[in-house]
Length: 328
Image (cartoon, rainbow, N blue to C red; front, side, top):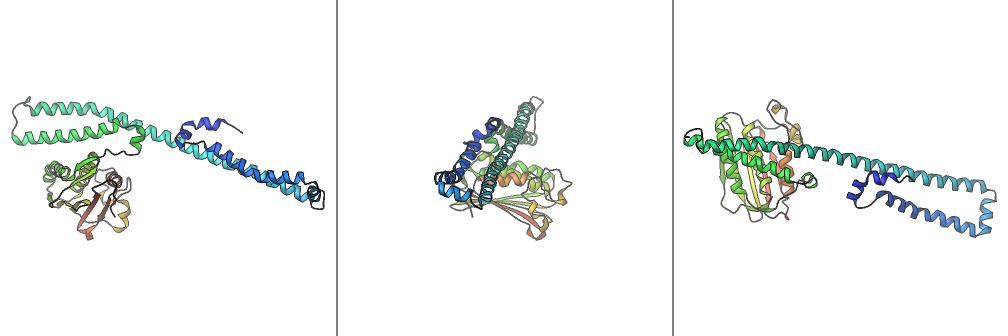
């Protein structure tokens, strides 16, 4: 038996917690006990042995035993090869995942430098290094600084994460105020909405909007939903952002004017890189909504979309206040 394979896949085997080759060997040893005990019984019973092998059917009996043992050994070889293929696939996937993660970590690290320069330049402008600013200019710079800070946090989250944690999309649990998150994002996108001649509206019902979750990832959910709404709402359209709560859940609604979604394209909404045909000319990657869904799922919530019969599109996110809960 070739023993190089366990060492070849040592890293994957260590992650599995057990050596599948040893498990396979143990299974076949146990399975082989039955035919071995049968042969032992025949050998010790000379009369029975003579009747079987020296009688008229002796040749057939010997042939049957030979075929059985050959099939037994061949089955072992086939299953061992299958285990090797599965481990090889797991090893290759692990290497590929590691390479992708390394690229992301390297890119995120390199992005820090230009962001630092941008932040410093904006701070200088805000402090009047380039001359006095009116309130509108100062507000624009503060908005830019706010978004630079968000981007820096996202980059830091990727950079500081271990490979395993990054792949598993880890959560930083804490008490988050969804109302504060939504209000900040609405305020940040208001200038872009005005520039696009889109009416961005916001309403919040009375109540408590604190929930247990990852504030950074929840910010991504709100930011991506409003960003998509601004991007895909036609000139003169309306975006409505609303918050509701009850004792167990917090609900976010983002509705915008739209020509709707064809029923044949509904399955593309939350698929990675899946984009609607009518949006093909608009810049985008098709990753925003899948990321949103992953984050909502991590918080044991759910997200739905209503095409609005060709007039509006409404995204509804329902999140439990307690991460251990799950919305229906």
